[in-house]
Structure formats: structure tokens, C-alpha cells
Image: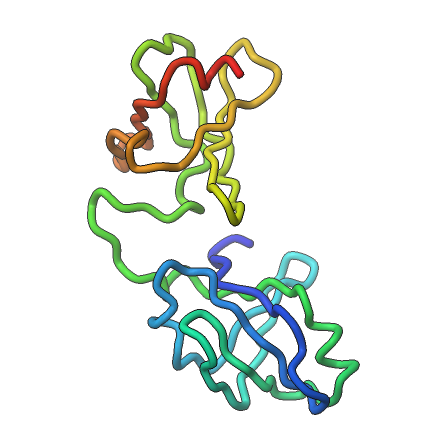
Length: 172
């Protein structure tokens, strides 16, 4: 959703009065502790859903009651919903840091790989995040693990990601 970033999701219902468990998927969930609302996507548009009450139960999870969500059935309908926030609420990063949603479209450069490459997206999995990279002349995208050892540097002004992953990973 343009102008918004995914901050978390509704994981499950809590009790029978309409409360839900919200998980924040950010590396540091603390900047999002005192929000008044999240946004849900509906036909490509951001729809606010206001927080009535919230109490933390883990560093990355809170029990939340949303305005207008009464009862078990209404809470059940929210399970799995992605929660969005405006990009203006993203904390500032250092020059060498990045948010995953910034990277699609970046040119990828890796020593020993002479063909043109472009980052399609970052796939987030519980065990390992992966860069999905389109390599010129190859029908299927290449998946490279997102690990510090493979990231040489990021050139934001020129939208280029410099990797130093083993060449063999590009032929799998």
C-alpha cells in the first residue's frame, strides 16, 4: 500500500469480548507502544482502526481492543489482518541501514557476476529472510540469504545494493 508500511498483524483473538492479540513485526517494537490507531487495507485504501485499550504481554505482542469490535465473531474476522502505519512514522535510520520495503527495484552488484541484476523484493520467513533477485538471462529469480556477511554496502542515492555472496548461490 503506497505511503504505508506493514508494522504487524492480528495474531489471534483473546477472550470473548472482542479483544485480539496484535504482534508487531519490527526489530524494535517499542516505538509503536503508544499508538492511537493502525490502518487496515480495504481495496487498496488505508482505513483507520482506532485502539480503545492496549496492554503489552510480550515485547512484540499486545492485547488490543479496537473501537467498534464487539464480541468473538467481530474479533475472529480480524485474525490475520495486516496492520499498517504511515511511512512518516518510521524511525530514522543510519546511512548504512535500510528498510526492506525500500529495496525493490534496486540494482544488485556482486563481484564475479557480470550480468545485470535487480532486487524484486525481500521475502520474510521465520528461519531466514531472503533477497529475491532477477538475474538477466535467467527465467527464475535467485534467492540470496539476507545476512550481514553478504551485504557489502548500500548506495541509497544510486539505488544499488552491493553484495558479496558466493557466486555459486546465483546458479542454484
